[in-house]
Length: 317
Image (cartoon, rainbow, N blue to C red; front, side):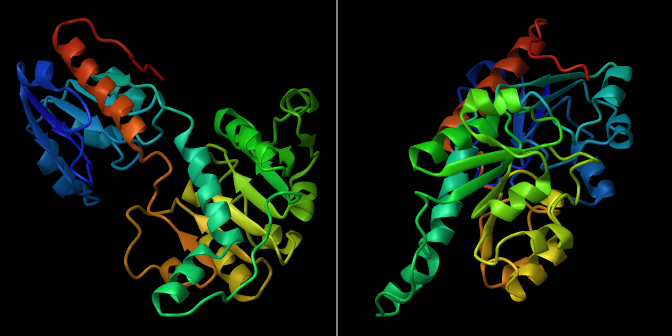
């Protein structure tokens, strides 16, 4: 039994879980890079019976899955993965399993980015290291208005943390209700425009879909305060990169904290890397020790269970 672990950038997959049961049943190969060329990816994956993927880092299309003659099991971290054609896998008799996904790490990073921007942490650190001292004036979170786009599992955790900071919290999404906002103790906004107009910080917590792709663009940045900041720890294509850069360069908004991108890893020459006013992190939202222990611990158990004929965490759609 040949098992591939994909996209283990930090080479931590085998250290984050007990793989002994799996190793007694098969051979594990770990790949630390991401291949985007489909021919090269197919050649790499052809020998493997089992493929373990980390979130959406490597898409597994129906065409690719159908071109892998030995593939029998896919295990993804998380219970949903839009980058896997589950229907195609099911038609081909390939089992797809998922793991739990902790909901604390991404909200915490949201506030790391928010505080980094509000208190000018990166420029102040650079000033200190170059021999300087105070160079800017920060913004308080307490008393500021946080607008949350999407009040689901992650958005709700963000709301709770914001309330602990003493922020006034508002929320909007297409399907959000007044009752849900009342339950969370946040102000319901009946339109995206109303949320953007009033917020000092805007944070996005929605899945990528046809409806949310490009949700924040030129028109939305013009509706925000010039002093406002945008945080995106959700999915890159929800925000128009070109419009974001233009909004910051023109002073339409004060800045943004971005953890997710249209293409990942982000190319070294991408214009986002050269835009002042952006605080960028390399999709760290879920990259924590606890999350890795859950992801890889349950991945190892799912592989062993499937080999032993008792698969669990099966995804069918």
